Length: 424
Image 1 (cartoon, one colour):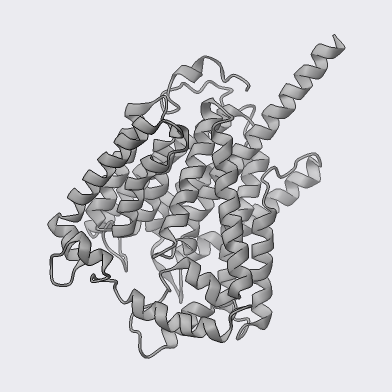
Image 2: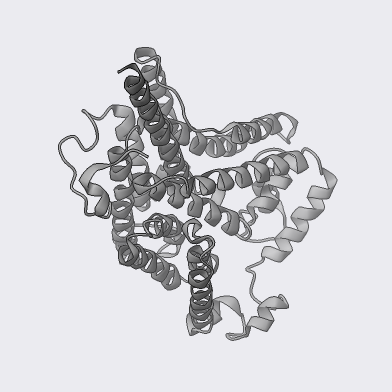
């Protein structure tokens, strides 16, 4: 693996960036990719209405349009520029999503928006694999997630103080973003244990403070699934024991007891028996599953689950299924569900196996991507993480694409060096 010079001994947040740290003058496409995590950080500033639409909704549309034009211009002037993110399973899944618009209940604006939102992160990943080409650029990109976290905290603080108008005041909407930032921090270990644990701990503490149950316990599980501790059973046993202890302590705090139980308190046994506050999820899931059985193979079309919940008189205030696996099954049937699960499992496995075969900042990126995909796998059980396009999905694909892009260019450089040596 190619070296990244004298900066390798320093954490990515401390390593100096020289005038050539991002290669030569950065292209617009590279700056576009750099902006992806920052957009997630400032998104609370855009939580305002413009007519019947939110400003944040305009943002992802704008990103899609600018991204397409950027790629077209890049291909026009640099025909050798290629996408290096292997994404065929995702393209197959997205094909099913777009085709579902034709056999669904209709092709209105909302359903087209859902299909486009699912497509944007994959496109961002492809762009990232094209424009991030070396380790210094990758190091700078990962560093931006620290700044994105600080921006997010600043915006959330302003919202809590009432300085920003919002339909969802407070820090709770920040929990999903913090789960991705936690992945980037934790992936820095080994060797940067203190920095990684400190960053992960801050993100987890914020999730605890917001009262987000699944985000908190998902972040607590990240050290357990860390890909670089495979086979180290003593370390992993210590991590598991510590995580269980911290998790139980958090569970029995008054704030989380109130979040889990309507009566104000309960035990782990109550959780196992299903006697806890699901915020209406179980009722909604039962109704959704009845509809799934009516259209088991191809579903009812992208976005149809939200239409069903909002029009159902038995449910009030439930806008989303709060289970992405059930949502995908409802909208695209068993065919779409199979494609989605395969793409998700394949992507997680693909980046996971590369963490042990790489080193330095490239390993950091692959490990962060692996942990991010693990978060997606876990949080999709009781949340709508797929709709968090700017906050989670696009940055996750951007990390994944950047890692693949840099790995490709490093491999090309090594092959070129070998050819030069053989010629000499």
